[in-house]
Amino acid sequence: MVEKPPRRKLSGAARTLVWIALLAGGYYALGLLALQEEIGGVETRLLWAPTGLSLAALLYLGPRVWPGIWFGSMLINVSLERPIVPSFLIATGTTVGLLCAYWLMRRAGFRNEIDRVRDVLALIGLGAGLGMAIGVTLNTTVLTTYGIGVPLEYLPRWFDVWTYFALGVLVGTPIFLVLWQVFPIRRIRLLRAIEAVALLGCTVLAALLATNSAQHPFYLVFPVMIWAGLRFGLPMVAPCAVVASTMVIVAAEQGHEAFAGESDIPREALIQAFIASLTLTGMVLSAAIRQRDAAHAEVERTATELVGVIHQLDRRLRPRITPPRRAAESLRSPPELTPGPRGRDPTTQ
Image: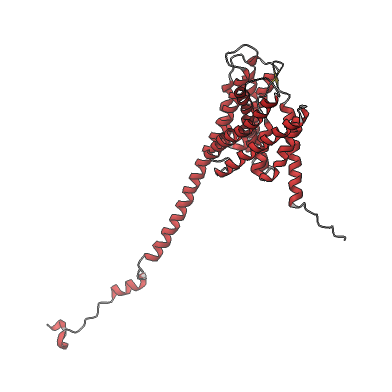
């Protein structure tokens, strides 16, 4: 029988190059998909998913894959027929912002499981907030300097770009972290799988009801998100948030009844507020539940160890008890009488 030669594994550098290529391709594909967003025939940016993918890649693979972000952003800018120099600067600004977000979150002790409230706060404040603000400031400066895009003042343009970059981090980063941690899918119980499928179905149903009514009943989706946070945590909160957000964006693009009439609140702001509040509700609830469960498990473990220590101390400090047989014999036999002083018998005195 001929032995098969051992399979050669890729070296560390080769694996890094593969991840860089995959990240660049994923960034480019998601960017092209996001560029197709239109509401009322007007090109609109509601959520920039490539920032979520890029930050998740940095958190999971490390900062060595940053060239994938730069190349993906460069491809997007070139596809928009922008000049080379602004495209180069925008790609650099996006990469710097995401690297800053990664560094700040790691300095704050962020964990990829997002199973603590402090992890959610780090993702919001340092990832979506400060990190994206750095990148958006660089990009907006380039756009304004070269006169690219819609002719807006600096601050309105800055806020517009920051909003969809931050939403991309809030919605995209958790789902990609979940996908990296879940696959390959482990064995799960049948009832648990049925409940997960039912949860996704309820998410779709609630989103359909919310987007096909002129009364804007977006609150219908929140009980489903609470269900996901209580029962499954982040592994189902993130997919439900993505499903609901995608359905709302598609409904807005198709002009469903919830977005057909006039409103005092701009439709873009309404959609972005809904996506942000829905995602944050699920993540905060999930992290709080997981943190409570971890604290409860730690208390039980400490109590078990304490009981063991008490038993050991009890065995060491307990006085030795006379065996029952010897104790009975000592009770049956009378005590020996010792002679009194000067050799006299004490019974005769």
